Image (tube, rainbow, N blue to C red; front, side, top):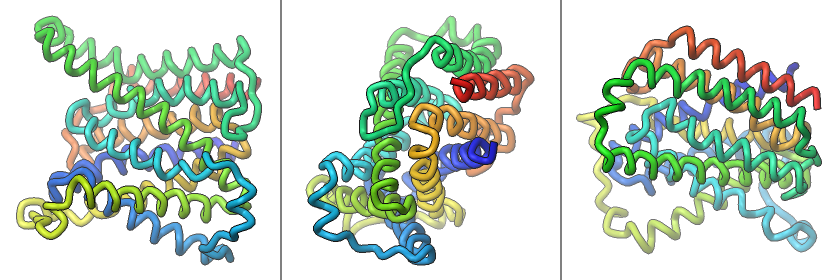
Length: 315
């Protein structure tokens, strides 16, 4: 039960990271540099955590030679996932930006556990496990899709095909981002298990991503390097700079849970937190989001998702 509560808290951090990163992008006027700022901040936070817990920040050559190459890819996948979320948030909104990656996360996690990809603990795709996944998906549909349809059904009928096709494309991108996230979570969990330190593994993952972003910006965003305009007179909220802290908490939490619960179970628990956090952002208009009050259907949907998680846990 303690791990379930911890997983939900970890999940809540993600929509806050997505929302703050979106505002940071508006201030910096560069999604690449917004990601870089957050990776730097997250790396500093995790470095401090690793040192406080008695871990060094270095890696021995012997360790590098005895682990598979893919174990270092968590940071690379993290860059892809973060950039995807920054692109999705202003186009799909807080809840929908979490919804589409959820589909990719769920099915990606099931495959990872079933085939023991990235050294994830084995959990076969059983009928009972699929029932739990169906309940989670039903909860997602009840929480996000059904309320949106009931409120906007007339508007949805009048939406132009071109706009629908565009939104469908962004939705597909969100699903792909979810699959990438499932792989990242499993890889970081494997690295944390190999190192015996989730904090150090998370730190390495973010530093790897930070280096990759430096390289990308150098080749593709160089004109902006010396001309970043921090338009603080237009948008001076302090919280736009703490997305990296949320990101560090999310990566660290998943690194802790995956070796214990497996990728699929971890994904299901964290998803409850993600949707709950998104609903809170919409309800109270936190971090600059447009207010959209929670309704009864969304509460019922969250409860259905929780039921699905317990069904999966019984497998």
